[in-house]
Length: 440
Image 1: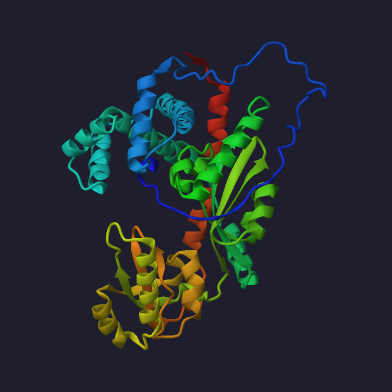
Image 2 (image 1 turned 90 degrees about the horizontal axis):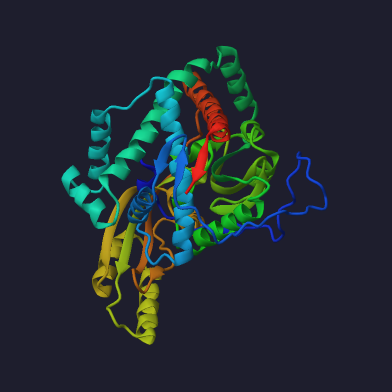
């Protein structure tokens, strides 16, 4: 429901162009541009009036505080805070346009519906609504800001359901054609992609390019997760944190050529960008790859035992290295899961069992290791001094089965949703273009 409350963590490889973006095309811009007047990039407009609706500095501050708390962001620099406020303002402007357009089409969201969503969000934090309200105030946000975000998401979703989805029709022949192509494409690759898109007119091209490079640097460094930035994407997939879902080779061609070409050469876990697309720039994240209708070893289910030890506070670097070496020696000497309890007792390690772990659900570096292990073997130690070190022992493996064809209903639903998303993106661009916006 709330994009800001669903952020996770990610570590990815990075592919970033070293050159500045080319100038925009399709516009009648002279080669020798002479600027009349001055734009001060240091001047920031903290508030705006969107078709008569005022977005105040308090609105921006409270929504920003909600995002910071939900994503557990700490030690943001002054520059980061300034950038966050600009992104929040743009998101609030889009939210306002969506609510206004829904009301114009006689679509409203009742207080009871918002209350029910607030209860669910509070429960995700393990709190009652009253406790959650107190929490929001403690972090500098408010119940009003949360309710406004809920209203915007519900209103826009309901508008799409009532005014756009009924106009989308995917016929039986088209579905059957997709099924036939999937059968013919057996063994070809599918791509699970996520995207962050930011629009960039002629006056913002360099700014957006630099902004996305900073996003990538933050994601790569682990200071901010991909999902944190995805909630500011200007694509219709923003409500799903940029998730484009699984795309086969045919569906990949429906993306801009620059994105499709980049996706084909990426590896799972890799992030690429900024990539120039019509109207702006995108960041692309390849979550995973698979082959159509073929069994993937990474879909195998593992039975694992995890051994973990924690380092005492204040442990010297030399002592930590010695303890790590002792842990590595002990775990590599394990010959079967029957040895785990004995080794754990000798090392003072904690043991956790899990019999339903898919290989692809593990971090990318561990996936390759697990696929090469034999039953009874353990991984090299991993972790950190702060969080402790761990090793996984493979106790069993259920190999993946060959994937089945999706049903006709599943294909129809996926195609319809993709078309709704494209229509929603186009509609939001139109609303931005026609809006009367005054910055204060």
